[in-house]
Length: 246
Image 1 (cartoon, rainbow, N blue to C red):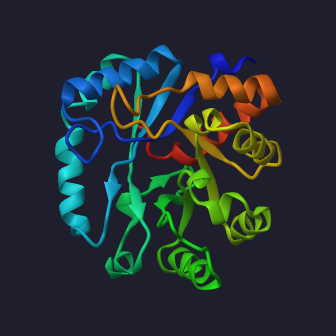
Image 2 (cartoon, rainbow, N blue to C red):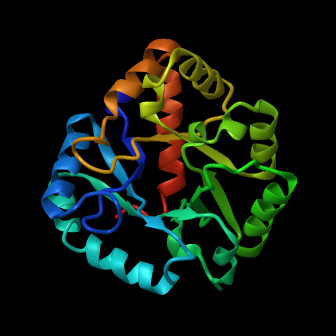
């Protein structure tokens, strides 16, 4: 079966209008969704930035719902399924929340997954790994580490990635990373081949500088690793969001 006939999923976007540094208004949100639809993406995860040290979770969820309400009808009319989640910044403030499940995605078995943004300068020390483990134990969530290609300490350390996977984490990469140099491209393709990358996304923020460009990166994966690799990434994403499709 061709992946073009599968339900492609953009796991990481900033499409909600006026929510963060992503789409500035409803019209830009619509254009971004339309661009993804034209690239055969039918499921879009809405993952606005949540910084627990800047606002309360309650305030974030209220803003998220207000931003979501006007885009939901448009998506439905155009055959696009939406997943309402977050890209949550990981620091100690997060542990002040009693329940972070509303920030997460949910699979068909009721397991929760949190798209987690680490500090870009993180050294991924033992202390950090232990805090990630604490997050999992405290809230019964599976962290999906966002755009791992942006963390030099992580992306260049295969043993560290495997340590985090063994802990229970999943890994996400941005498709734009395949256009940022041969060495990085080769490394990420190897990680996909070895099942060390689980989901992909555009991390789209707008229609110009950071657009929802999905097909170019997927084509690189397809050409280098074959159709089965694209299908596996698609199915991984669909499994993670199966319990929260809107």
